[in-house]
Image: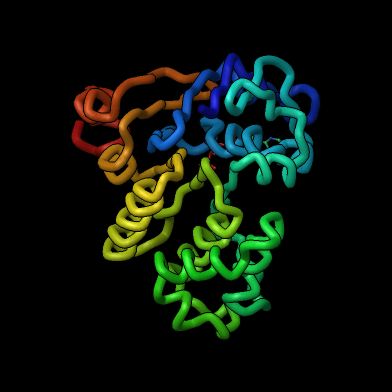
Length: 239
Ligand code: ATP
């Protein structure tokens, strides 16, 4: 279980962005995290992966624990070794490297097993196998999203954090990404799915949280969120 308790995060020593957030990602689950731009979703992911420092942010209160062991304060590589990987918003692949070299970079914390992991990732994303010698920068947007997810899976994570995987993708590709998330989860990886596309996220997740200006305002099973009036109006456009 990945557990966040009363987490407070500040940028530049003064700007309070997370104000006491609590959230659970149980082992093997899919959990959705919804919220408008600027609500603090990316900041929460940074706190989970040890990337706050790089952005002049810091945890000032609360905790992040993995199986009851503290994670906050660990360095990013140590967190990956504990089993948590992130796919960042905007994909952030290495555009000049080949598809396969991008994947190998993702597997560097997992030395011995790179060949097996490559087979696993190529099994999930046959298109990446077809394009394995291509320069990653020439892939389409959807293929780059798959490469970013494949790269995170090379570390064999038990917990995968996805920051807006459907952003900018055509509906057909959103469906494909959705199917892949379901498959990744079926194979045993828990997923925290940060999405603007609430309908997609809540169609896979068992539980969801809504973040507003750094606070959790809704914390419910996904089917109950889908029935919530505010969620229907503001996140599903059904108001
Ligand atoms: P988006 O969907 O736009 O990424 P978000 O919910 O992920 O939104 P965050 O990116 O976490 O929100 O941003 C939360 C708040 O923190 C915003 O007000 C943002 O301007 C601020 N913020 C983010 N990064 C920094 C930073 N490095 N320094 C200062 N403020 C920041």
